[in-house]
Length: 84
Image (cartoon, rainbow, N blue to C red; front, top):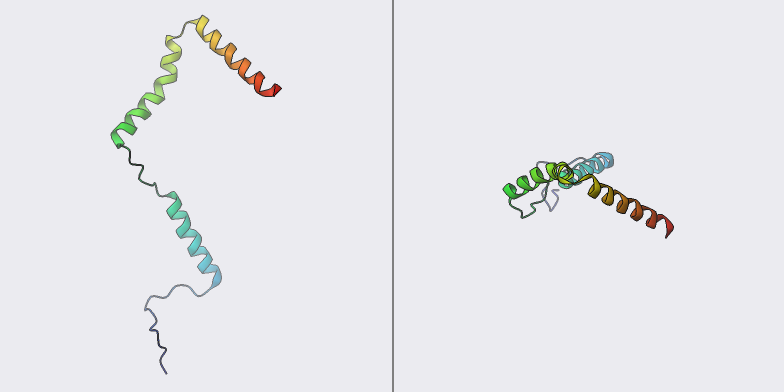
Protein backbone atom coordinates (compact mmCIF):
# COMPACT_ATOMS: atom_id res chain seq x y z
CA UNK A 1 0.00 0.00 0.00
CA UNK A 2 1.29 3.48 -0.85
CA UNK A 3 1.73 6.20 1.73
CA UNK A 4 -0.79 9.06 1.50
CA UNK A 5 1.95 11.72 1.24
CA UNK A 6 4.38 11.21 -1.63
CA UNK A 7 8.02 11.39 -0.66
CA UNK A 8 10.15 13.91 -2.41
CA UNK A 9 12.78 12.59 -4.77
CA UNK A 10 15.49 14.54 -2.97
CA UNK A 11 15.54 13.42 0.62
CA UNK A 12 17.77 14.89 3.28
CA UNK A 13 20.06 12.94 5.57
CA UNK A 14 18.48 10.43 7.90
CA UNK A 15 21.28 10.38 10.48
CA UNK A 16 20.81 12.76 13.41
CA UNK A 17 24.45 13.88 13.26
CA UNK A 18 24.17 14.72 9.58
CA UNK A 19 21.00 16.71 10.21
CA UNK A 20 22.69 18.62 13.04
CA UNK A 21 25.69 19.34 10.83
CA UNK A 22 23.46 20.67 8.07
CA UNK A 23 21.56 22.90 10.51
CA UNK A 24 24.81 24.38 11.84
CA UNK A 25 26.13 24.93 8.31
CA UNK A 26 22.99 26.75 7.22
CA UNK A 27 22.94 28.89 10.36
CA UNK A 28 26.60 29.80 9.93
CA UNK A 29 26.21 30.75 6.28
CA UNK A 30 23.29 33.04 7.10
CA UNK A 31 25.24 34.70 9.90
CA UNK A 32 28.31 35.37 7.75
CA UNK A 33 26.39 36.92 4.88
CA UNK A 34 26.36 40.69 5.16
CA UNK A 35 22.96 42.20 5.68
CA UNK A 36 22.16 45.19 3.47
CA UNK A 37 22.88 48.27 5.56
CA UNK A 38 20.98 50.77 3.43
CA UNK A 39 24.11 52.90 3.16
CA UNK A 40 25.63 54.26 0.00
CA UNK A 41 28.68 52.06 -0.77
CA UNK A 42 30.60 55.04 -2.19
CA UNK A 43 30.04 57.03 1.00
CA UNK A 44 31.12 54.07 3.13
CA UNK A 45 34.34 53.76 1.11
CA UNK A 46 35.09 57.47 1.51
CA UNK A 47 34.45 57.25 5.24
CA UNK A 48 36.88 54.37 5.58
CA UNK A 49 39.54 56.31 3.69
CA UNK A 50 39.14 59.35 5.92
CA UNK A 51 39.09 57.29 9.09
CA UNK A 52 42.27 55.51 8.14
CA UNK A 53 44.32 58.69 7.97
CA UNK A 54 42.38 60.89 10.41
CA UNK A 55 44.38 60.11 13.54
CA UNK A 56 47.76 60.65 11.94
CA UNK A 57 46.65 63.87 10.26
CA UNK A 58 45.24 65.19 13.54
CA UNK A 59 48.38 64.29 15.46
CA UNK A 60 50.53 66.08 12.89
CA UNK A 61 48.48 69.28 13.31
CA UNK A 62 48.62 69.30 17.13
CA UNK A 63 51.23 71.31 18.94
CA UNK A 64 53.35 69.53 21.56
CA UNK A 65 51.59 71.54 24.29
CA UNK A 66 48.14 70.47 23.11
CA UNK A 67 49.23 66.81 22.81
CA UNK A 68 50.45 67.01 26.40
CA UNK A 69 47.09 68.45 27.55
CA UNK A 70 45.19 65.66 25.79
CA UNK A 71 47.45 63.01 27.32
CA UNK A 72 47.00 64.53 30.78
CA UNK A 73 43.20 64.52 30.41
CA UNK A 74 43.27 60.89 29.25
CA UNK A 75 45.39 59.85 32.22
CA UNK A 76 43.06 61.64 34.64
CA UNK A 77 40.05 59.92 33.06
CA UNK A 78 41.71 56.52 33.47
CA UNK A 79 42.47 57.17 37.14
CA UNK A 80 38.91 58.38 37.77
CA UNK A 81 37.59 55.07 36.47
CA UNK A 82 39.76 53.11 38.94
CA UNK A 83 38.72 55.16 41.97
CA UNK A 84 34.99 54.64 41.51
